[in-house]
Length: 284
Image 1 (cartoon, rainbow, N blue to C red):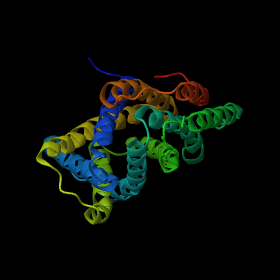
Image 2 (image 1 turned 90 degrees about the vertical axis):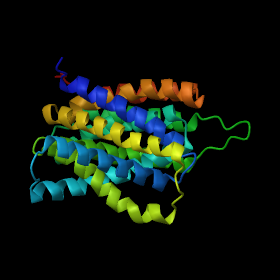
Image 3 (image 1 turned 180 degrees about the vertical axis):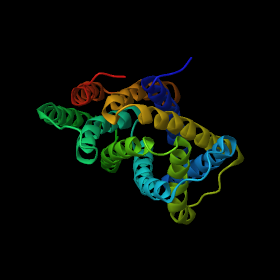
């Protein structure tokens, strides 16, 4: 069965959601910078193996430069998101990240010249209200203190992730998906190496396999996303990010014993509705 762009994007998001859960678990034992580095190190290994199998030739200088720049955005997205995962419940981080599909419409207008209308402005306002509800609705009882750094990191991640999706759409129409995935891993791997060395904690044998799984999950997810974005507009696929909430709620409850708060659920409804309004077009 041949999957369409929407199905491929949804499958990619599923792989990346499982990867996020593994990262959250590992972040309890290792510094976030080290986890981020090893995620891209294992991703680089998996991507190199993919290149060896597919043999797509050599990328052009323009492909390397453009995707190298996008890899910086990918690094900022990953490290801020992973830090938020280490500080906040999985479902809450995902809800805050749902601002990204709305922002995709904004960045698509600025970079890809897609139209920004009153509907998008209203969606941004509704999404802002939903975000405020999620952030303000956290109970701080029983000695529990809110990680505001985690909240800020999740919101920053949403902004740069939206930019990353638009840049992915831009490059996916020109470059082979293998080069996109390879450079998206190699760039952050090199950039994070010095920081990871400064905080390095030797991984245990039991965790090595989990770190290697990050590469497989990440590359599989990004291959599916790159292929999907090569065939459909960013704004059309962005709402599929909401399927991650299903995975986050399920994994958070089963693995981390996390139950989403009422405020998180209400905020999620507002943010999802707002982003759907911003990107409401015929899906292909």
